Length: 472
Image 1 (cartoon, rainbow, N blue to C red):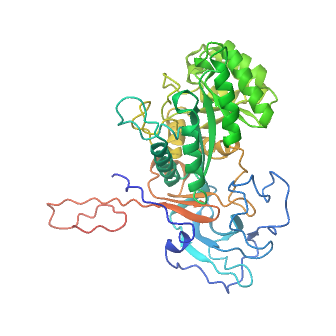
Image 2 (image 1 turned 60 degrees about the horizontal axis):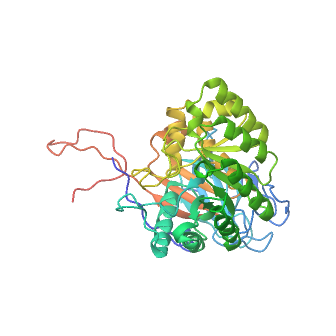
Image 3 (image 1 turned 90 degrees about the vertical axis):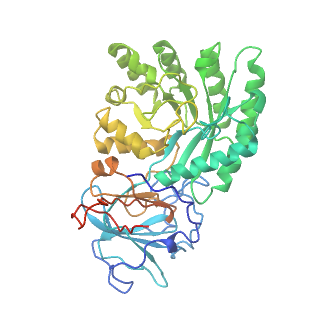
């Protein structure tokens, strides 16, 4: 049963009103459940990083669309009858981009004087913190059918980066980090195109960019280093690169860390990880750097002897380095498609997130860019519990992006994904129908219908069905 084709997401102003109609939930006049969890006053907490605080400018924790502190904001939404991973069935009220209240099913109404709420029936859905995409390639996405190198026309890149981000939003990722090459023939053109895409997508998803220079050492690296600094000034939020392809990998990393330190930017480096001495040097140089260092995809670590890989993992953990693995396949900078040894890294205390990598480019012509598929593969191939596998594409991935934590609790950002199913394992196995919430608004919906019918049968054989089907 194929998934339905992705549909353009509704506009932020109409997304909630296009949701399912009224359900059997009580109206606004019904008294709230005394045990319901109410959010604190939106203006009460201003501590950076706290659940009740606004996130970085433009982040899901920001204040766009919020009302006056202490008063109901516009576009308030009540999610009715959703199931949580602990088995409870609840109503969740959203407002001003945050979760206002969580209560037993049927217990929540408008929740304030003058409050109006749009209801969305999520009966039969599992409600989760939204996933994030920590490793995308916006400039090369959707180029698998291109003849020769990926086209680098600015308008083509902008269009493809936008389409790729919307595809991943439909899967549930309300934030993503796109690696973009800078330097060479295209200069900063590709980065500018992806930045334009990110601005156009505000309100639907949050797109940040990683500047990825080619060579940074020797005489040839002088221009690359200047280009990298210009990329940060232009708006790249993360300093990245591929030390494996530079004649002096250690010098390359030193240059990246220097630029990152100058501008206070995170670092996100591509490396295969097959050279333990190189990883050890990176860990030694990166240790203690704030706001942090991420490495990926590190598939080569899995090809090392276990004792060598374990020692390297211990060093990465001690340095506070995060590893982003790509269980769905590699990306353009990695010839090997192996996945990093996730369980070994986790056992050493390394923070491990999972990304998608290539989305239908020459590195992976069938890449889906689906966080739930990444979680499914971590569970099915790498032996992680479904909860830990989903954590790698949600909480861990959001941490890589520097975003605030999300829980289905009052006061946390309203970044949510509803998936048809009643248990996480089942949702990862058959996650077809999805509802995506960003900043408290429905921004994408995918509905799938399964039907079994024998066209030659004279009577309905009583086969299981989902939804309705009418012959054309």
